[in-house]
Image (cartoon, rainbow, N blue to C red):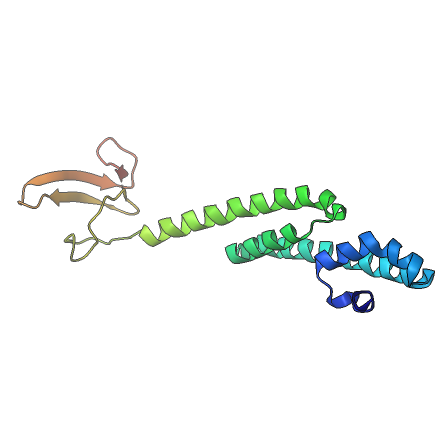
Length: 173
C-alpha cells in the first residue's frame, strides 16, 4: 500500500508490478477512485518516460555524447512493460543513426589529430615531426619533398604542387 501512495518515487519495475496487480488490490483494499488514480498516475509516468527519452535522443543529435548515448540505452533497457515496445524500434533506429554519427565524428577527430600542416623548410623525423607513415598533400604553392634513409641515401624526391599538371604531384602516399 505504501507503493500505491508514493507512486512518484517508485521504480519502473515497481510501477509495472503495481499495474499488473492493481486489480487485485482494487478488489480488496482500494476503492474505485483510488484504482483509477493509480492507473492514471502509472500511465502519466509512462508517457513522461517516453517524452524524456525522446527529448534526450533529440538533444543527443546535437551533442553526440557517447556517454549520454549509453545512458539512454541503459534507461530503455529498464522499460520492460509492453507499453514501450511500440517506441523501442523507433528509438533503436535513432540511436543507431546517432552512434554512426558519433563514430564518424571520432574518426574525423582522429584524422584531425594526425594532420600536420608544414610550411616550406627542412624537417627532421624524430625531431620536428613524429616518425611514421604519412600521406602528403600539397595545399599551396609547389616544391620538392626529399626523404633520405637513415644512412643518408635518397629515398624520395617528389615535386609537389597544387596546379594540375604532369609536372607536379598533388598527393604522395
